Image (cartoon, rainbow, N blue to C red; front, side, top):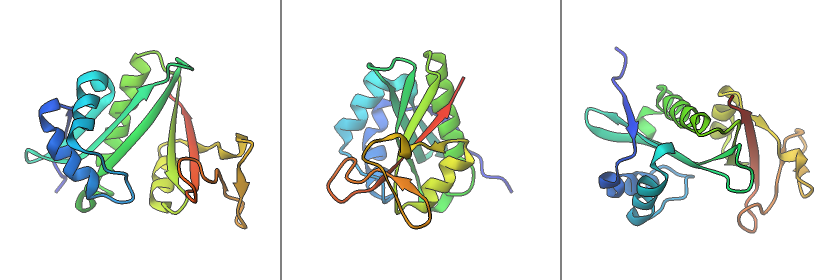
Length: 166
């Protein structure tokens, strides 16, 4: 039996639930409720949540670049562990990218920790390509995988993914 999932825009009233979920899905960096309320209030056109039986099981959001106005940055994707590999993440990302395209974005970027092979496989399955090699400071490992060392934090290696969205 297929799971009934509803995807809607992120409501500000659910910021506490989204915050709790964000802290429960490592390696995602969790944030306090006020952060998700700001996202929903001011960037809500590109912020979505997934519900199963009225309960939030995932969320995704991003922002349009003010530097490159055709570029969308997919900031966070969080899916509860018990519903992973069920299409929830795919539906959330599809919703976010469709909203970004409606805002005039032609490309989307997402970052993934080098250790997060599940995240890497997910974004690649969605048509994203690892573009880390285009950064001057990028490195390649023994397998030929390019990443950017110390991208956000010292000692944190990140892969930068990009996708054409329209």
